[in-house]
Each structure stands twice: as structure tokens, then as C-alpha cells.
Amino acid sequence: MSALEVVLGIVLLLLSIAVIIVVIFQEGHQEGLGVITGGADSFLSKNKARSVDAFLSRWTKIFAIGFFLLVIVLNAVAFFK
Image 1 (tube, rainbow, N blue to C red):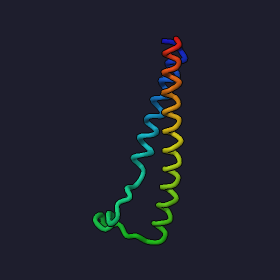
Image 2: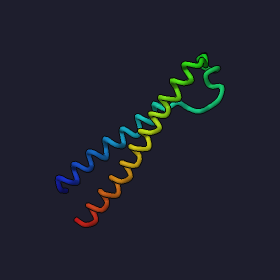
Image 3: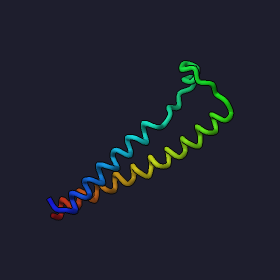
Image 4: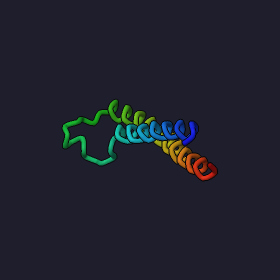
């Protein structure tokens, strides 16, 4: 196992943890869930949720694309070894 494979493996591990964390922080899009948990829907909470959801959605896409590209690179490195 070369140093490049070890470094790429560590980066892959960090990206996979990042994808998991970002997905966990996203809110569900189920209607009426706030009523069950007692959360009140106000104008400010709706706008804040949209901006946070947009931020998390953007980073989920970035991390997922990076994850898949890194998997492909790792497989290519292992194949041409």
C-alpha cells in the first residue's frame, strides 16, 4: 500500500463522515411534523430553515460529488498499481 493510497483513503474517510453529518443535520420535509413536536411555524423560522436547508443541501451535493470522484480515483490508482 503506497502513501498515496493511504492519504486518499484518509480523505475518503473524512468525506464519508462529512456526508453523513451534513445529511443528519438536514430537516425532514414532512408536513405537520412541527405540530406533533410542538414547534411553532413563524415567518422567521421558515426563512431561517430555508437558508440553512439550502446551505446543507449545497454542501451535501459538494461532498457527495467529491466522495464519488475520490472513489473512482482510488480504484484507478489500485488498478494501475
